[in-house]
Length: 153
Image (cartoon, rainbow, N blue to C red; front, top):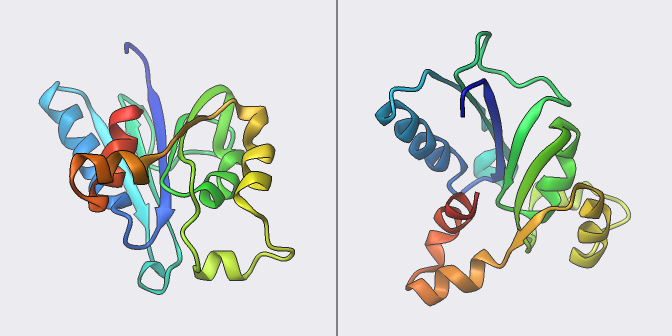
């Protein structure tokens, strides 16, 4: 990687979105990369949306402008759809293929979308869908789902 690289990590409160961004940031620092980050998590404790912006070797502030993210990492299907407008043309998307229910974000959606409907809407981005729940359980703990997704990314 020789130029700026912008990563948006999204999920539901409690999934470890901020921890994952910290892990990624520490890895960048270990490589001597310049990294900036920002997070929003106001309603996280109530099952709300959490987003973290990671800008590697960027020249400007820590927030990613919609339509410019190189990579979208999502720990929840519905969050991937909600934040898909941040992805640039040709950007990559790595997504847990399941939705966390119920969440405050999900209950605001009308009509309610199924996992298959969300996957169909995400198809235009050619996402890398990961069954993080299954993989984490096979590794010994369902709590490792965010690490599974981060590793896949």
